[in-house]
Length: 288
Image (tube, rainbow, N blue to C red):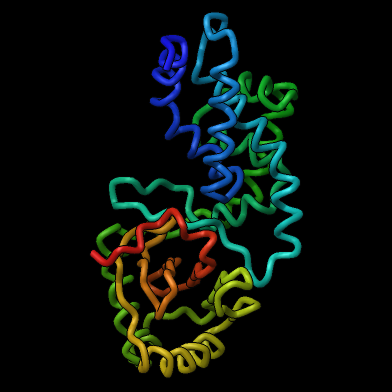
């Protein structure tokens, strides 16, 4: 590696985690985010870096623009997706959790690409509107409006009840035990009346093809799963926060799976399950 190439890597690598976070929240895909950031590095390696006054801002702009180019094709793929679509799960420790939760990421999917970019850059990453304006080629005032509209649309996806992290982990462990042992009485006390289950198999693993909505429907669904779990018990890989929500990674037969729980008022309001193997390649499935 030449000295010039080494300089490019040395300047780029400390910024890579932030750039990955931006791209992932824009695209909802770990693999796509990594591809975008690698593309950004190739551009960084080719540019006259001596003329770049602020590398971090420059690379944020490059990554955001690449994401905006990719969002249209990503959304077209989701229109023909089999069953509910969920973002690729990110499993985090208590120290890594931020406030971009899974419900918020789903809410971001309903925004226009420019609204999504303005909201994420300003509200999540603290970027000023002047830089955002330069990034998405709009006036700063227009960027403020984009972020404001986005904020209004995603407000309902913000957690209304702050659950202590230790309580969230305890809740996840209790739910795993009750759901896998067929303890329907305990499950009844844990689920909200309007609970919903979203299961993403992508047509590659068995999963519900539509959300399961409501207490009775979810309990019936769980009763069906009980027969499966009775024959082959789930194996816990680890507990953790999945896109900001308490949950766990398990092996179900030959399938790696993540389960995340949205908990409000000491009741589970939503259960998000990802089974699509294409979305789980980045997750360590080794039993701990």
